[in-house]
Length: 229
Image (cartoon, rainbow, N blue to C red; front, side):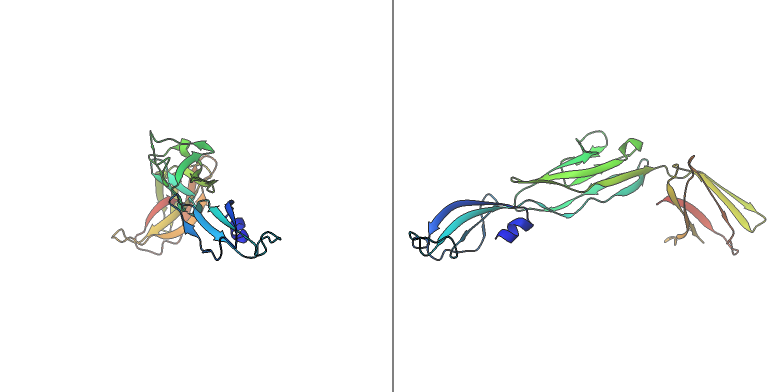
């Protein structure tokens, strides 16, 4: 039992002791009680003395913490989008959730729903929502915190310019979030499903300006778009 109690950071509590002469051959399997906790017995190989030559047994309770099987994931979203953070948990006991932003508890309201649920939704995000998000999970016996998930908020490309020169080059430029990496993609037509192909990933400069000169035109038509990484 002791290796398992170490593995699960559980609490092992002795509820009663018995002598094998008055509690011989108990069932050593674990059972789950109505309170959600695990109960069991041990026998044999225990302490022996002149009074109890056959050893002592115990009745015990094993309390287990909740376990996180899916951590919330970091993400990048444009201003005005919806961000969703989710945690997946297993527990013998019912659990409660408390989401935090940079270590401060969140409450539902304004653009937040799910502050005390396994899924946190942040609607119509803005620069002020960029932060680290985590959740505290608690059951009747233990509490633990998830890892941090970072929400990055960026501007979608604004004022996209395209200027062809001599039919052999195409100058592309837009304004976005300073120092944020954007992906330029191209497609030969806009009939669904559109097959967008990456051209390059470049960060905007310190003023949010981004530019690229396309020299691989190869005739025919091309469509371009820029998206956040």
